[in-house]
Length: 65
Image 1 (cartoon, one colour):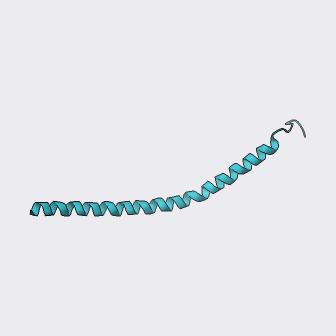
Image 2 (cartoon, helix red, strand yellow):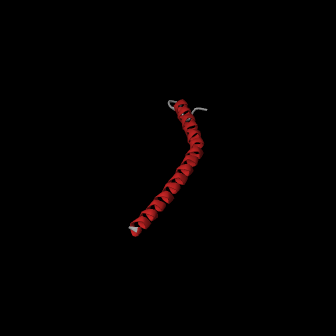
Image 3 (cartoon, helix red, strand yellow):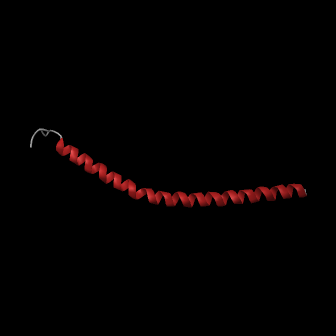
């Protein structure tokens, strides 16, 4: 019985360690998501500006001064 208790204690300890690591990874992912949000918004704005500029150029004579 003591062997089973010891093995259960080891498993319980390992599970606690895994939970702590998962919590730590969740926090890191949350921080990373926040840092990626701003560049994504800038890319969206830049793409919109490119589309707008190309839309204005369509149909214009490239040789016109």
